Length: 389
Image 1 (cartoon, rainbow, N blue to C red):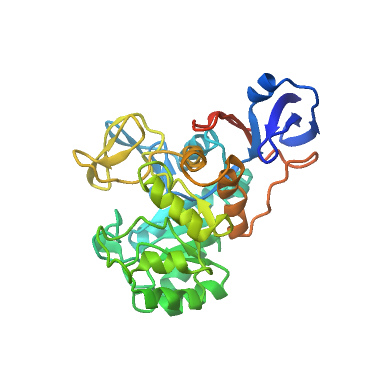
Image 2 (cartoon, one colour):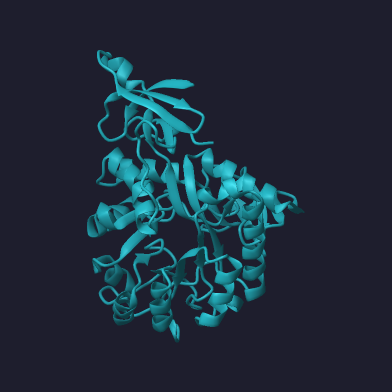
């Protein structure tokens, strides 16, 4: 049995945590600690839940049988590939995540989903860690800017028959889908997604404000990484960012890795959406967790910088995310108008609430779905440990 003195992330009060295997055996208040001892204790919080993990450690969920290295791609067994991503995520406190597949041909998406489902069938203990898939595309805007890094040749109009075949390959586990509502047939597609219990999200869109309102009326519930996947220049008043910010029916996910959104924009989004309609994602790519250097991904030369920024080689332009959710939480606690507890909730309870997953309980008899870490105001989260392994 492991015993550890910790500080509860909500109250800041000292507790003694006892964990045996994958279960919290006891969690009791502790009295009489000095202020210096209290300040030195690690914090205790629920594990992170991220609805948008594209891969990590050289693995892309779009390509289950290959791994990216500084010297090119090498073959990898899909079960090993999933283990690599899980190890990377859990090292940063992520206990649950949605494997995210971006825009590609039908055959590539279909084969990837079938392959991952075979891995989960062979290792059912991993299913609770990945409670579903997120399809980010292929029904996105074809315009430069909103399309982001998604390949132009594969973005296309929504096709319900195609989606049903992909859902069948996923054994019904596609849980979240990001699409551009301005594409022909998208509004009816959102209605069908909603009726089927799949969360429809707006993202990589060039829609006018009226179309955003129609998408919400059709059932869209989330803005995917709001503020990114956009045109560089927008009309100052009538645009899709203001419309999504103003809509109380829409939740929003944001990437707060320090590169995707400036702190002032994060503060504005937090104030508009409030913590009740907001969640964090790191949007980790296959390059997340790799050492600094040059890589070849998406048929493009990519540079992973020492600070974790991922950019098109020789340019300032972002090429996905190279950091994890613990960094995002620390940034929001430092730069946003939120406490540490509120920042943690955006990465723990809020994603679970959106996805309809059970909320974690820090109490005896519950699974040890928790993390400990060290943190001082203004600093990073360090020594992150995920307990339910």
